[in-house]
Structures are given as structure tokens and as C-alpha cells.
Image (cartoon, rainbow, N blue to C red):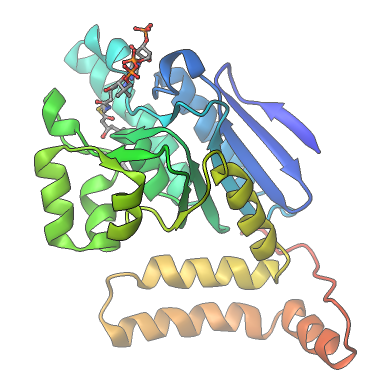
Length: 267
Ligand SMILES: CCCCCCCCCCCCC[C@H](O)CC(=O)SCCNC(=O)CCNC(=O)[C@H](O)C(C)(C)COP(=O)(O)OP(=O)(O)OC[C@H]1O[C@@H](n2cnc3c(N)ncnc32)[C@H](O)[C@@H]1OP(=O)(O)O
């Protein structure tokens, strides 16, 4: 396993075909400062073109919080002009997570609030333990969910539930979060990171070209009218159907062995 740091607050560990992006600013509950955002952007940029990585887990190095959202201390002293520049830096980070070309899983223990929950929403799946507390409290601090929450949350749980959570800014404990679909899996206490890594490893055992194409189809087709969505699927299907992976997958099945996938072409 190799580990690399991206600035002071972000690290990436790659173990086989699974990469773990660790938020490592425990003293501020991984609050998203300009510096932490720059680290996330740089890490996601490298993971996006790392041909050996087939799934990513985003986790925290401490159990009290996955991420407590935007850094309210740093923001407190920013001019409007500085705040605009700050947002551009954070936008690159959130977009970097959202646009990871492989399956991404958030491992949430403790607080995931505001931009912290929006980072988790930018992943494909969210695995939480019973200490998880999620929510979008932005209206309580004079802003709105600006990390994609007003768009990602309704797509996950529906417009009415998203409205209730955004307008009330309330925190949701793990059991209710799981029942509402705010998180996808609930583990035993302290088990979210291990479960997320195990889930990522299961996915990463499969066709790297197929995983990337399936994510493109899921993301690009989301919200489209069915006919247009099916065209998106067809285009994604073609990138796999005539690839080495399909040939290897069929051969492995017939030879009753595990597939030996090649590195995918990096777009
Ligand atoms: C997907 C593509 C989208 C494309 C567009 C993307 C654009 C991206 C730009 C937007 C980025 C997201 C913006 C987001 O929507 C806005 C926000 O996130 S606003 C902030 C929301 N978060 C909160 O309101 C939570 C604030 N924190 C708390 O309520 C509490 O700290 C807590 C988490 C409930 C924990 O409480 P306690 O257990 O009592 O612990 P403490 O409060 O003592 O905290 C410990 C320590 O951490 C510091 N800290 C905690 N949270 C923050 C924070 N958000 N910012 C800065 N520092 C924080 C706290 O001050 C303590 O430090 P100490 O004072 O002891 O030094």
C-alpha cells in the first residue's frame, strides 16, 4: 500500500485497485478550508487518471466527524471578493469528487454537515455507522447548500424530503438517515470505513472499463427523459461491448477462471 499527502489535510492510500482519500484535519472536524479543498482537488485529479484505481473511498482519520462543512472560521474574515475566490477553489474540490470516473463510497462516522454531507452526496454510495449525524444546516448560518446539496439531495430522497431537511437545517441521526435513504448502509459502531473499503473492493474486482462506463451512464442519464437516457446507456454500452474487457470477461467465464482485466484507456 502506498500513501501520498496532498497538502496538510488530505492523504490518499492506494491498496490494490481501491484508493482511500482521507480527510485529515481532526482539530477542526475536517472543516473545508481553502487549503483542504486544494488537497481534495489535487487528489481527485490524480485518482481520475490513475488507471489502476477502480473504486474510491472517502473517509476521515477521526471518528468524531466525517466533515463539518465549510470552514466557518476562515469564512468569517473574508471580503466578498475573497469569498468569491474561496468558492471557486471549493467548487473545484466538490466537482473533483462528483466527477470521479469510478465508483465512489463515502464512509461516514460522526458529523457530516453542510458541505461535509454534500461531499458524501457527491459520492455514489454512503456507508455510515450509528454515530453518523447528517444534515444541511446552511440556512442556519445565512447561506444555502452550495456544494450541490439542493440538486443532489432531491435526486436521492425526493423533492419534499429534501425541502424539509434544507428548510429546517436539522441534523438527522444514523437510524433515521438510513430509513430516509440519506445513507445507504448502516454498519456497527466504528464499522463504516471497513465496510466502505470492503464494498469498494467488491466493485473493484470487476471490469474497469465496465465500471467507468456504468458510472457515466448512471450520472449522464440521471434526470433525462427515458428515450434520451437509453441513448446515453447505448453509448456507454458501446465503449465496453467492443473493448478487451468484454472479450476477457466472456473468455474467463467459459474457461471457468477469474478475469484478468487490463488497465482501462484513460480519457
Ligand atoms: C457536487 C458539485 C457541486 C458544484 C458546486 C460546488 C461549490 C463548492 C463550494 C461550496 C462548499 C460547501 C458549502 C456548504 O454548503 C456550506 C457549509 O458547509 S456552511 C457550514 C455548515 N456546517 C455547520 O454548520 C457545522 C458547524 N459545526 C458545528 O455545528 C459543531 O462544531 C459540530 C459539528 C456539531 C460539533 O460540535 P462539538 O462536538 O461541540 O464540537 P465543536 O463545535 O467544539 O468543534 C470542534 C472544533 O472544530 C471546529 N469546527 C467545527 N465545525 C467547524 C466548521 N464548520 N468550520 C470551522 N471550524 C469548525 C470548532 O470550532 C472546534 O474548534 P475549536 O474552537 O475547539 O478550535
